[in-house]
Length: 172
Image (cartoon, rainbow, N blue to C red; front, side, top):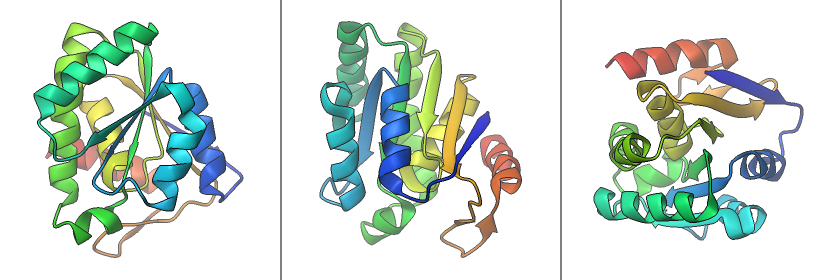
């Protein structure tokens, strides 16, 4: 896993960087009306594919596979709601990890994904980073330089601690 630290704290800058880096942007969310989700959709443009996080994983996998093939895509930007939005809908980080994995795993087996880009902060972005590692896909997480992530348990992680946290999550 590579952590790509950028100087800006502006979410739009990181969203644009990830959307431009991935051939396709998959947004797996429960609320597509948050400011962040609106930014992602705008900056990804035609590369965007939205999927309800709680949708049937097989159906979402099929749609993603179709999109990747149609676009000739080899890399994927995965984004979605943060943990603060997911918990409002009674969804845990672990459940987000499981759902993202259930979508990406069959796609990767049929149409290998070369690289995953993600914000990696929490929620779906963090799930994408975990799943990329589990599936053996090169994964790039884009964060502000002095990132301090705060989990649902109010634990803060810097970039080095994030790598350790992800490896622990992957092993669980």
